[in-house]
Image (tube, rainbow, N blue to C red):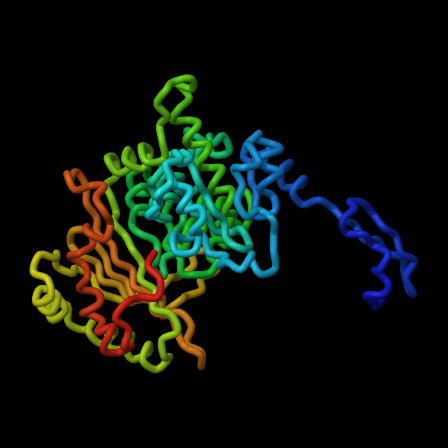
Length: 402
């Protein structure tokens, strides 16, 4: 049968309930339901809570009793209120200022915990008082604390997976290895996480671009990650709920670094680069991989205090569920000290491409742990010279730094 817009004019989608129509061929019903109610029931049943976008007030205010003032920009708007729907330090300016991460002159004490979700609520950003949690650290900390802090995982984790095109830092890898968990490195694409979850092989997954989720649903769930963090904070403070000193977000991250080491990490995005120039840059990096000794010689000329590269290749993934193979997923340079450089091309249409450069340095048991990321990553600025970024693209600086 054919249902036209005219047939549905009598359906009030603001009212939950069933509307029946006779229709020209067979009768049919239109069921309007409140998805947040269904989602809350699912999360309560699983001893978790989840929320996305428009669910924020229902969960945080009505269910958890938070004050209305704790919510920012929670009225959905088609134009995102004129802002950018990306939960990052670059675009979530109002939250960054409230958490006192920017150059604020306010004397108001910032909150202990802050979080943001993107436009479709599948990604998240976690902040503490004057403290930013890198997305790779965030998911690694959730994995490290999941079994003891989140009842849903009390019986253990089936496995974990990280998006490795190769964006996410090795913080995830180190935790999985230490906890003896099955660990999968997958390319960009939610289907790879979905395959593993459907096969019962993965409980928690994450990617560098603030995407985190678990097998409670088959998609990324940005506010699930926020609530996972709240569960961890509650667990860390369970023995001193009435105390004066809260185990804060920063405390939890620093405790994690003390146990697993610190992965200093940043991503440079060069957006709207000419497609031709972007492809030439990646082709040049690919051609350099034929001689590891030449690569190391060039790197030492740029920066003598950098560890030697022990692996240089192009990442590819064979799906353990369906056997499919994904090639050309990013050129990587793995250093002997656990540091990494990764170059990945995203989009090569007529308008332009985005070149993403991932720079990571690993340190454990060092007095330098916890220092400023840009300072810690200084030895690996070889990425820009190694790739000849400015020569190929004409760009002297990235569009976005994460």
